[in-house]
Image (cartoon, rainbow, N blue to C red; front, side, top):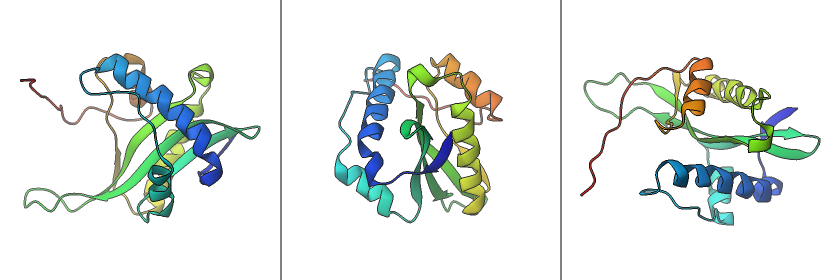
Length: 153
């Protein structure tokens, strides 16, 4: 098992993983999510960015998971400490490969990526209905810090 930074050769397997991830989004919140198509421009923008990368888990030449990480500065608001966060935009492991420690390897690599880039902490979001995902994040040291609430009209 190898964790590395993705490149142009990984676009097709990443598209497959994004479709799987987006199908989960539709399952958990169909009012907000659809299964979309990630264009070449989407990936190129990440690959050429100075503040984000996609880390891939590769086994025997096959990409089986990924973590899209971004380095973000905390908003400049008087009451907020000036901090830097490594934000996990998306994380997925092929359903057939889950419960084998691959997600934890990606999480550890995401944390190391943040440390390397001067981040003070790591953050992500998870659907409240995704109880398996919540357990995964809690096992990896995450705890609830804020609730996002909304109202449909």
